[in-house]
Length: 236
View 1 (spheres, rainbow, N blue to C red):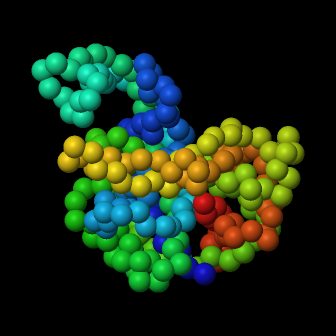
View 2: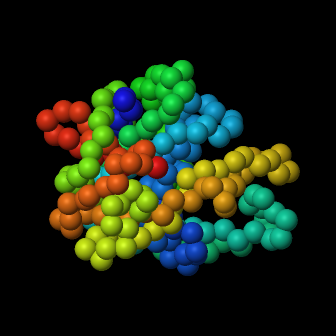
């Protein structure tokens, strides 16, 4: 099987976690929905396209920085003279290196995504609008099924793939990550809405030092790159 492999970099970024308003805490890696949204922008898609995503990487450090937050009156959808401005704090990840894998069963869509990521029509961001994404390489790589993986980078791993789903030997942090969304238009403005039933993935965020992962190879989603490095691929 073949997947698209994207190596990319961000200088400072916040992958905002929902529910934190005064302090914008960040996910350690971008959510699947943010990556799929970035791909949709690169390709000019106006409707949701189904695809499978794997993301892993590292950041050098983090710190908190100030940002301007806006409060809107009921019924407002954009800033005007009656809106209120304030100051908040955002957790910023520094020098983020990412490896993203993308797979879709639709061969035509697969090739279109590959072409557009190599030559996007506009600048790409991942996280906030100002969190510009530098794409260093886009390649098509072969992957193969596996039962065990030694992590090379911190990664999101869907819990359903782990062989011992309740085994405490699997260290890491559990997150519920948004994936699937739909576009709703309101007052002439297109808004991204989350699919509450099918749009969330339970994952473990795991670091290389924590464990060697044993996976259930009867489920689609876990692969390694078919080369000497055997980099893990955790499609969700």
